[in-house]
Length: 51
Image (cartoon, rainbow, N blue to C red; front, side):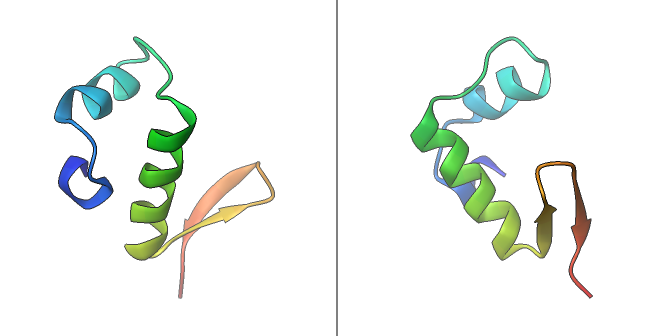
């Protein structure tokens, strides 16, 4: 995930462990990487894999 989003591994680990919320740029990079992998964000209420 870190490589795909081009953020540090620590950013991902801290986010997953709810230690901190990444900055706006890192969140955008994480979202872009997830969308590229087939994740679709649904109206701020959830996610699903694209068919």
